[in-house]
Image (cartoon, rainbow, N blue to C red; front, side, top):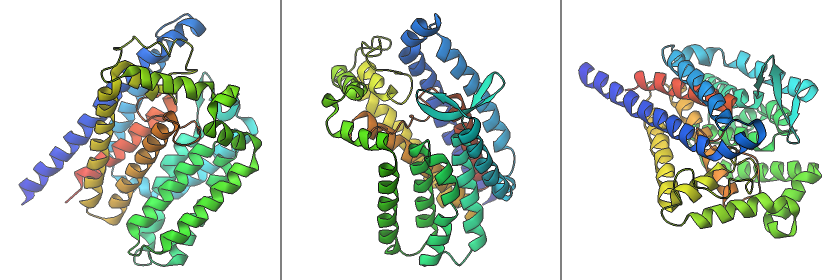
Length: 363
C-alpha cells in the first residue's frame, strides 16, 4: 500500500509539474509574438517584454520549487499575517501607488514595480483555508457563510477601489471555498443575490464603470470600444488554423497593449480556433489535476488550499476569455501564464508550488 501511495503521489507531481511548465513555456512564446511590435515601437527592442517576462518566469519557477519543498501547513499557519500584510500593501497603493494607463495598482520597489493585488489573491486563499479549517464542524448555516465573507470585506474594499476585477476574483474565491466546505446549497441563493447587489453598488460608485457597461453593449458607438472591436476582428480573421505564429496583423497597433489582457485575441488570430481551443484544453487539464489533488488530500487544509488555487485560476481564465469575446464588460483581467505581468507569474507559480506540496501528501 505504501509503495502504491508513493507512486501515485509521484505521478500527481509530474502531471501537475508538466502542465505548469508547458503553460509557462507556451506563455513566453506567445508573449514574444504578441509583444514584438509594441516593444520595437516603444522601446526599440523587440524582446523588451519577453526578457522581463523570462526573468519573472525564471524567478517564479524558483519560488515554485522552494515552496513545494516546505509543508503547506507552515504557510497556512502564516495566513493571518499574510492577510494583514496584504491589507497594508493595498493601503500603500492607495497612498503612494504608481498610476499606469489610468490605474493606480503598482508600488515601486527601487527599479522593480510590484502589484500587491496579486499577493492579495494568494493571501486570501491561505487565510480562508486557515479560517475554515479552524471552524471544523461549524461549516454549515448562514452564520458561517456570513462570517467568512465578512472577513473578506476589508481587502475587497481596498483592492476594489482601484481594481474591481481583482475584487471580483477574491469574492469568487470566497464563494468557492464556502461551497466546498459547506454541506448545504440553498444558502448560496442568498449569497448569489448579495453578490449581485455588491457588484451593482461597485459599478454605480464610479462613472467610468458605468461607461464600460455602455461600451460593452454597443462598442461601435464609443471611441473606447476600439479595443473590443479590434479584438473581435482578430478572433474572426484567425479562422480555423490561424495566420501562423508571428503573423498577426491586429497586434500591429490595432489591438492596444496586445501583450496584456487581450492576448487571447492574438492567439486566436495566429493559431486559429484549433490552437485557441487546445490552449483552453491545457487549462482544463490543469484545473482537473488541481481538483483531483483537492479530493485526495489527507486533511481539510490541503483540500481547501488546492480548491482555492483551482478556483482562482478558473475564475481568471473564464473572465479573461469572456472579456476578449465581449461576453462581459472589459475588466482588465489577464490570462494566467500567458499575459505579460511579472508579479502575476511569480505568485501564480508560487501557488502551483503549494499545490505540488499538497499533492505529495495526498492519499
